Image 1 (spheres, rainbow, N blue to C red):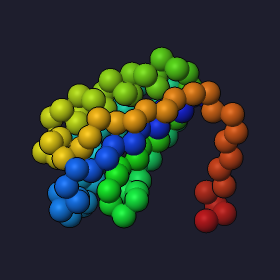
Image 2: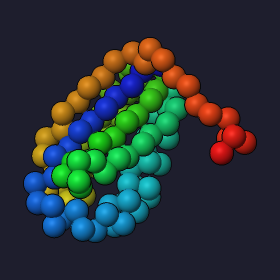
Image 3: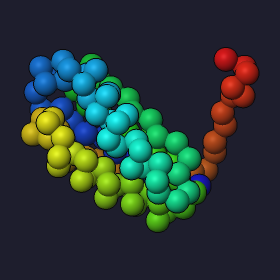
Image 4: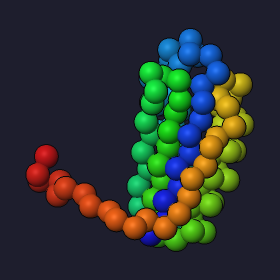
Length: 107
């Protein structure tokens, strides 16, 4: 499996006040596009560092899927109302060495 982590700095913290709007746009616009990519496993979005950054984590079966997710993420950000408030992402990618998830019934 392959992981892609994108870390976007938020230029103006007041723009992050509409976190609910961003969440809805991601769930309705970005997530369905990622789920179409062959080998998709999961996608997480984290509001990090006191709302000064947005971090996304994508897991795919292979590198091709992970890189396609970055292309689609760039397209999504270019068209999002918050586009001028997000910096160019710092991207970390690589093979997923360890992965463990709790069983759903354990929650």
